[in-house]
Image 1 (cartoon, rainbow, N blue to C red):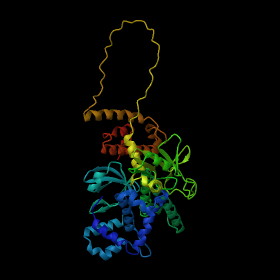
Image 2: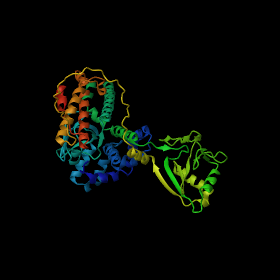
Image 3: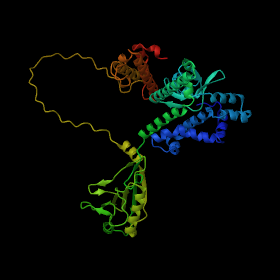
Image 4: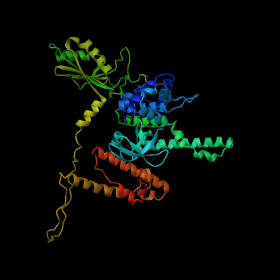
Length: 506
């Protein structure tokens, strides 16, 4: 998100591939990527394709920046110190200062408090605490929204606060998990240091004066990027079409092979030869359709009882009908013979089978393919709207009512909105609806608040903290929805005031 120091960083990245830094980089790369990949059963080499160049570049940048800040024994070696000592004369004074600040930085979890697009934004460190700081960055300030959670390195530079190049957007849940993990590490470090202090006859209370959160963060970059990576892989796996295989453990691809019939071919001759193929079964009620099954008369059996495992990750789909497993179908259509199968390998085997049996009756085949993703997209587009329910008219007896002499009712005309409303009217109607919805929500149980309503939860200190996070997440999602035009922007200020926690909004 920043261009400051880009040239120096590019030179430093090249320096990383010298020994011993290359070996140390590879170790850190495994620390950052391996746990999430193992948890999600993903080969690390697949990450560039799974994440895309920008996302993978971000997480790779986190690994490089982690290396830039590391100090290695026995002589406290640091790659930036070494680079500046040997090549620093080639860099501008500004770039040298930038690298020195980057060397001393830590990656933490930050909360965006507000922003001026194209100029700057204010953010609060949710791990180390303290007052919000103003970060100068034109691009980042245009992309962030209030209450965003971001993993980034914020560092002073020429009387201003800047961010480094590696930035990871976090969900509220992932950010909370990282903060909790870092806090657990901080408490554990505090216990160990106090134990050592007592052994050395030093006042244990002096440990509390040490910035332990920063010390933990200096070693926790793999924890942060690993949490982001696992959440991103999980999100993509839930949205992706599953990888499927047929019973021959072949990747599922729907293939259609069309053979034009030769000029001299007659349907009767084609049917007779197809009936002579042992692996094809024509049902008694079908004249021009055959099922391709495993040929168990001899040769290799590639059926579903094969002991080979399904490639991971993947799902096995078994094609069968009432008579058993099926490899595909063959049908005769006018002047074409059509083979339908669900893998490229079966398409090739089926072509060989049909060509050998009907070679002089068939022309050159044409093959078309559709992946599972393409089929699902087509079905989604072609899906008709749900039909209107066809309910029978109720057969009710005519009511036996006395005749009444009633005056004509004087009812006002219903005030229904016109179908083509001005934008300001639409916004007002939606806002009024959301006002009613959220006013009702304040009195109902919320799972994120341990099953309490917001009005109940704010009565305790811990409950108020959860309500603040809940409101921030509501606001942040509302801003993001407004960005894409899904909903007009909504002002949540009244909810903070209604719950008497407006002072906690900053």
